[in-house]
Every structure is written in structure tokens, then in C-alpha cells.
Image (tube, rainbow, N blue to C red):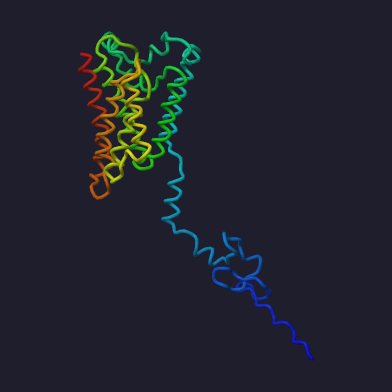
Length: 284
């Protein structure tokens, strides 16, 4: 009985001088070890690997989805920096005493102070002032979560404009509801309430039942806390929420109902200016 020689091995489709017993698991072409690259299932040749790679538009979209939120990060950094600056002046500002420190006094919002000094910068600086570790921790957690959602949907410029419009809306609300006297107002919660309201309206306008999402539950819980816990600025929260809700209506409309792009920039600017003008009128 004669013995037949084994069949010759095929050559790599890219290197004709290399015999190989391996092949691409996607197209079946013989390929050498230098050409094959491990895939989730088996090994792929260079051509199949290139064909399986997402297109430029898909890769750009995926990159955009993974990128950081620069405005959100910057806002958190500023809030934390201001809190540390206040702590340096008075370690008790961490939340271990009830009196107001000098640095808190210099940044906080109070109608009587504005009547006496006309220091309108307080409308903004109060939004970066926090009274205690728990206060800033809760606000920054919500800002981080909402920023991850809204900055990607709106773009960094529009998100930043909406944030400051809601912040100024919160300052106006604090002046309107508390009236003369009252405590020293501070915190990013007016702006954060605005972002929550904007996100809720945006989801609702896209056909999503907001009360089946974490946004709806968070908004309701925070509203209950606002009206039941003493010492929380009702006006600040409600003012920011109203501006944010209006911003959601204009800036987060479904694509088929979206207004011209310039309106989504002009609205938060106009809202911010209106809040400042109204605050000046309230103070007199």
C-alpha cells in the first residue's frame, strides 16, 4: 500500500511565499500569523478588520459620547475652589457652626445688603457659595449628573448659558420671596434646580414619561425637601426652576420642532438679563 503525501498548505493571501494552516474566521482566506489579528471571535485578516471598523461619522459620534463635559467640570471646580477659599478663612465653614464667616458674608446674597451697598455681583457669587460640606456635596453630585446629560445634548456654550440664567433666576427668586431681612443666601441649588427642570421638560417633549425616570423622582423629592425643611431658600429653588423649565421648552425641543439655533443662544442670555433687571427693580 502506498502512502500519499499530505496536501500542500495554502499560501497567505498577502504573502505568497508563506505557507499557512490558518485562515480568517470572517472571510475564510488563508493568512499567516503576522497578518491575522485576534477578534472577539477567532482572528481577522487586515481587510476584514478594516471593513469591520466603524465609519468616520460613527467614530466621531462615539468619541463625542465619551468626551468630558468641560463646562460642567469647570463649574464644579469653581464651586469647590470657592468652598476651599472660605474654609481657609474659617474652618468652621465646613458646617460645624451656625454663624456666618466674613468670607461668606462677602459673597452671599441678602436684599438688605443690596439695598445698602448695590453690590450686584452678589447675584452671581451667591451661586458659588456653600454652607457646609453636605451642602456643596449634594449640589455638586447633582450638577455632575445633570451636566453629563445636558451638556452633551445642548453643547457646552448653550449649557453654560442655561446654567447662569438659572443661577440668576434663583437669585431673583431669593430676593422676591424672602423680602427684607432674611438670612444670607448661597448655593448652586438654584442653578441645579433649573437644570433639573430643563431636563424634565426636555424628556417630556420627546415623549418620555419623566416620572418613570430618575429625573422626575429627584425633582419631586427635592421640591418636597424645599418646602418642608427650614432654612432652605424656597425662592432660590423656585426661581431657578422656572427659568430652567422655560429654557427646556425653548432649548430642548424635539428635532422636528426645534427653533432656529440662534434662539437657543439668545433665550438664556435674554433670561439672564431679565433676571438681573428684575432683581435691581425688586431691590429698588
